[in-house]
Image (cartoon, rainbow, N blue to C red):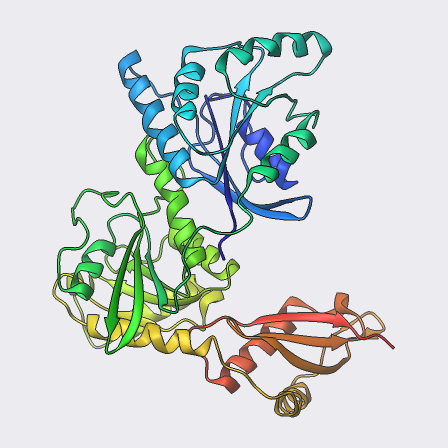
Length: 438
């Protein structure tokens, strides 16, 4: 089940990114005194009192322009944050005091059914704590005076946040295979969905960012129930404009978390970009099966070497998805589209592969004989035995003398050989190393 989402919202330069870094425990968000430094959303897994959730840092709710434009943008972003997040941390600045933008957002939050926690930031001394009382005018309770920079009051704030999160996901579980269509804006996600469905299910436009929701479509494919999830495009870092598109990304991330298989669309005319690798990395972190779909193949001038050169380009840029199969299609003309769903279903089936313990360990002895475990100084890694602990995705536990001796390259070696042995083409393997107890 996808983790709950907590969104941090507020005006520029009130300390949202500082609070984000404080909660996740590392400096993932850029912090600067210049207003508007965070131009793209940043997300990370966080944990408090044993409760796991996804924390999303967002850009400021103000934009340049007239007061009317500002009010419109504030409403659009606040409403979408409310719709997509399970809980919201509304950050204000005690040193700047209560502003019209704060009041505008508060009015929208009052009309929602989502849990909202008000954090009055930059309360670094007792005098400022008294000034925080002003924010009771917003009518949002409870109110927490905090200092994100120094960590003052953040524990109490998080206690309230996690207590407001749903204990059970509201999403209705089905036996259907869930396939998410993801990628940057304007790579053809909605067009592919329409081609697969044979009808105009989603809006198709040449304007990037048309799809702002993750649209679930239920269908049967040769008697097999499916859920296709079309998502909003994910822009390159720094290119998300203020407004609707920013919060649409939250739903795209949730869609990846919900899916069994992710169709990652690449634009053949642009090649693999940095943002493509960013999305692919999130898929890998979530343990999702991936099919790499190169769309707009009809736009490429070809000779006898074109496809092989392009395969090499994709494999070089996405080395960490070497297990993912690669398809070349044109959602516009229909070329190759008939292969998409069958391949996605094959990849999903591989998530349930299981190998008997005896067979696994015989294979392990063979591959270790070919490539002995590495040593660190005078100590050499010893792998005693392994077992498959879970499926969906296949998870293997290796019992060793010291997990600290497991080098990344040797872990990758074991993973690649297991991929070959099991014949898996699109599903990642999860390898865990534990110290064997005597």
